[in-house]
Amino acid sequence: MAIEISDISKQFGKTQVLRGIDLSIMDRELVALLGPSGSGKTTLLRIIAGLEWPDAGQLVVAGEDWMQLGAKDRRIGFVFQSYALFPHMTVRENLAFGLTVRPKAQRPSAAQITSRVDELLTLLQIDTLGERYPAQLSGGQRQRVALGRALAIEPRVLLLDEPFGALDAAIRRDLRRWLREVHERTGSTTIFVTHDQEEAFELADRVVVMEQGRIAQIGTADQIHDHPATPFVARFMGAVIELPVTLRAGRAELKGVDTSALPRRPLGDGPATLFLAPDQVALEADPASPFLVTAVSSTGKLLRVTLEAPGLPVVDLDLPRLQARGVAVGQNFRLRPLAGAVFSAPRSASPAGLIEMTPVKENIA
Ligand SMILES: Nc1ncnc2c1ncn2[C@@H]1O[C@H](COP(=O)(O)OP(=O)(O)OP(=O)(O)O)[C@@H](O)[C@H]1O
Image (cartoon, rainbow, N blue to C red; front, side, top):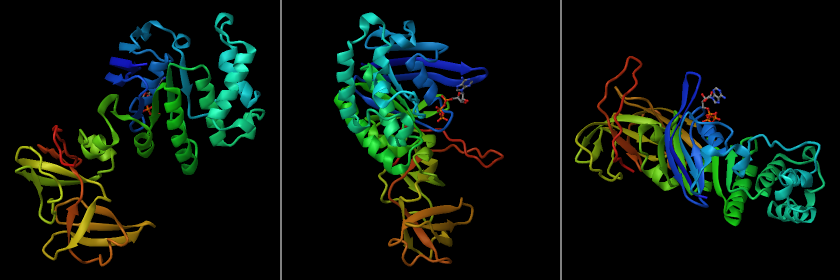
């Protein structure tokens, strides 16, 4: 089912939670809504589900106006972070529930329901757990059942709100892979909410990055990672080091920073900000560089190297141990970014020292 969302806005009291969301999702696509807490992800999902109504905007699914349809007529599978299983029902009964409560005319026969539940138990790889109660399941197993319950009704659209949020990292990874397979086998159009980048990029065909009720960027993992559309997206993707640079002939220039590994971009000359991720910068010994190592500490796998240069923000890098060999406090190093983004920056320092920037389309990857 293709989903067309146009100009959807939503306000709760005085808080504008969604500000004109436009989003087209293709039939059978798997899309992640990614963004910080409070950016409006869940609200958008609930509007698609019919659990919330927008103040303005359109929602058309497979050519049908869903603003005219109540939640129960939308045939949606919804999975929440909290498993929401019925505790007094077995796994089988939980899976069958959505079918047994259908109006008589649409209800499959008992035999059909049994066979559908059998199918789901196999698909979910929980064949042996059918007679157990939710309390007798692990978190990962419960979440599979919750997903199975959502899939039982053969939903036209599957919506998941932080479905693996409460599980530990290893189980999350397993379930992700498994969800991707389930998605491909069932062919449903799927939207899931997460604030975990890795989860979004690993699972989704396209990721929608949300910021304060707006879409900041839509794209594949590579597009968003390599070409963040705004400073917000760059920061959100982990490029938390911000250095004031001067753009000349498409190249960011700053004493002590060698940007030759970054491609030139067709940006106008002038002041700009270079955004770098702490693990995307190499160090080269250079006594003439203003960047002085002031601290080195271990974070386990990586070494955290702190550098300071007069008049610049403190730079914390995370280097693989091997790469950081020979890096010691009191030495000067040149920064050599391997990736980064640049945004032209007509800077006007606010009293808090924040920098206001006008995002430009092009940036360095
Ligand atoms: N029913 C409600 N009444 C009032 N305010 C609400 C309601 N639901 C959500 N909000 C507010 O709307 C904003 C967006 O909430 P939403 O849950 O959509 O964000 P989110 O991006 O999903 O965040 P999170 O990752 O924390 O779940 C928040 O400021 C929240 O407090």
